[in-house]
Structure formats: C-alpha cells, structure tokens
Image (cartoon, rainbow, N blue to C red; front, side, top):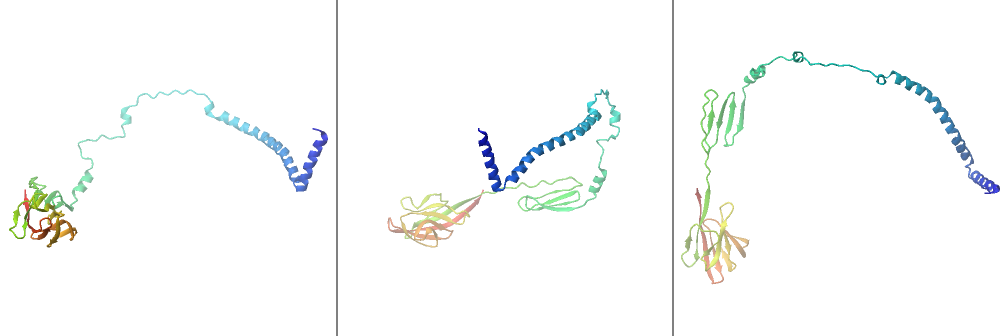
Length: 263
C-alpha cells in the first residue's frame, strides 16, 4: 500500500474521532493498554520474592518432609487389665429390685370391653371377666389359680319360606306352601304372577307380574308404576286382584305367611 494512502487513512480516522468527540477517549485507552501491563509485571515480580522465601521456610519447618522410622510393638493385652472396670454379675439374680418393688405397690383398676359384650375388671393381681348373654363367663383368682371354662358359643342359622294362596276369585284359592323361587301362580298354564324372592329385610314377598295383566287392585306396591306393574310387593296378610287379559278372568294372590325356621 502506498504511503500517501496510509497517511490519508489515519488522517480520516483522526478527523472522524475528533468530529465525534472520541479522540481523547481513544488516546486514554491506548495509554492504558501500554501502562497497565508494565505496572502488573512490576508488582508481580516484587511479590514473588517474599512468597518464595516464606514457602521455603514452611517447607523446611514441616515435619512431613523429614523421613523417620518408628518401631512399635503392641504385644498381647492382658484380659484382666481390659476387664478390670467391669464387675461380674449373676445372670440369675434380680437386677432391678427397686423397680420391681415399686411396681408391686401399684394397685389400679382398669375396665376394658371384652369380645363377648361384657367388661373386664383388673384389680391388683386378680382378674374378673363378666360376659354378656350368649357366651357364659370365666373368672380367675390370683390366689387359687382355678379357672372356669367359658361356655362355647353356638351359631344359629335361620331359613325363610313363603306360604301363599292363589286362584280365580270366583273359586276356592289353592294353598302353596314353601313356594320355590320362579314358581308360576296360580298354575303353569295361567302364569299370572311368578314368585320371585323375599326382600332384603325378609318382610315383603316379591312377584313378577305377567305382561298379560292389564289391571290390578289391592294394597300391593307396583314397580315401576301402578299402571305399568312389572314387580309386585306384598306383606303377610295382604292380597292383590289381577285381571288376566288373556282369558278375561280375575285372579287373586294372598300372602299367608313368611315362616322363619332355626337350624
């Protein structure tokens, strides 16, 4: 590059910086770039000498830098010296006599519930359990040590059966004892209703009503609606009259009894 072009380039840069007011700032930056490295080099050279002297003194004084050989003979320790602080104890002797004596002086009464429905009372060293009905009771005496055996509880199972009357209202009703589930009433040929089952509380008898029944009269409960009865509920002593559209007759169903039998 020609010298006049270089001179022109720098003169343009200086003119531009002067017009923008940045020429003093650039001069300060250039001076700082030259002076700061020189000052840092002088300071580091002056601080290295004392640090090296101090570190050399520490290294000379450190015992880890010195080699040494130590001999150690532990030998076998005497068991009498190791166990001299422990006193022998008899394993069959009561060690906590004070706590046992304090516990024996306690005399409290606690009442808790028992599985048989009664209550249990504890007083001192004697225990007495009184049970409710259905299981007997047992008592224990702390002095005599005799026990009375508890009576064995018995489990009772109940079975339920239904007795009904069914037939044409103009004739004598036919009795049906212990009706089985899904039995058509009053007969197979005229299934006006079908005995279904007992309710969950064993208080009502449920019947399935035929779709040929177009009218009902009586105190029974119809589901889903009285004019559209699919399930009929009757209690003992109640009766229901049902008009059977297939033959035009009216039939009556009477719940005579719900019988409970214990096994």
